Image 1 (cartoon, rainbow, N blue to C red):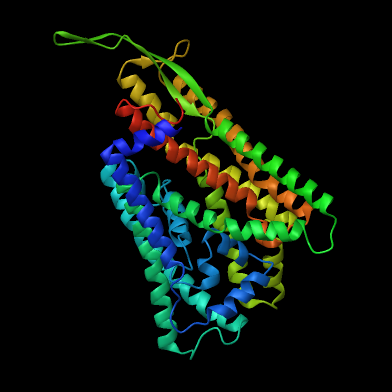
Image 2 (image 1 turned 180 degrees about the vertical axis):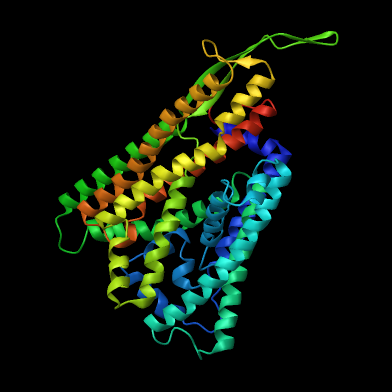
Length: 431
């Protein structure tokens, strides 16, 4: 491991990318403490710390930016929601978007540009709703409320989200790993000390039996270690489909004749389905909390909370399963794979080219995706059930989802660094 760390700094391009990513994360953390003008963050912080709803979860994912009501209070969630909308619209809902999705890099840039537009629109709507709603729930939160005050707050929050979106894209282009995932990773890790304090205070309250607290701590650590091992094991799992290419003569050269394989990951979607499911489930309770006291709003706030309500947990699992299938088939299109193999003279041994190859690939991907989706759902829901049984406070309820995101992002980042080292004939982490 130490040799691998030494090798990283020997590669100038890799060293520059890592330093750039670290600098962007420093900027992200500094922005988490810059308050929005004309607001009293202390009132919101007290409300968030005592909240048993979704605000504690949002605060955990934003690394404390939400409780501080900083310029990054909305985090990157509007961008995630906009990405979900664009991917749904690209599935033959809007012809132009569907056409762009098939145009390669040029189409991807067009979709990315429209995702930015949707992000700004959602950020404006969400920022206005947040500022008005929080001022209703916590009197005195907005200093000198008025049209221009709300306009300034909305402009500041929208600009903060737009800046985070830009930072994420810059990390993806000039840094290491997926920028949006890295920002979520940084937010969760920033909240780790506070979460640990809540766990300690819950397990070792004043006057409590120390032995029971130690047993709970050991049990929690064993579950965390088990989950980390399971996440790594499944994330690394690959189903290799053998492909044979026939020999072709083009001019004076002969092509093909070699045997290769198509690597299909057990969990090709990574942590994206969990992030999408969390974002969608956080949205209804967040809006409903602005009308606290209304029977319908209170029912939504109570039952859509996936960390405590049975209905919320069921919806959480269903969304994870659905998004895993959706995102996997967006990333891996069996029809395109089948067509490419046919054009290049490739075939799967024992399977006829054409429709049979398509059916074989689709069936294999369906079975793998089912395993990956059940794995993601189990990893996300098991810690929530344990935390409820252990009686931990609401601020720790995000533990299972956070662990999955942290380990998943760490694995993907290590793989990126590994590929860069191997490409330059250096030994990496995993070899």
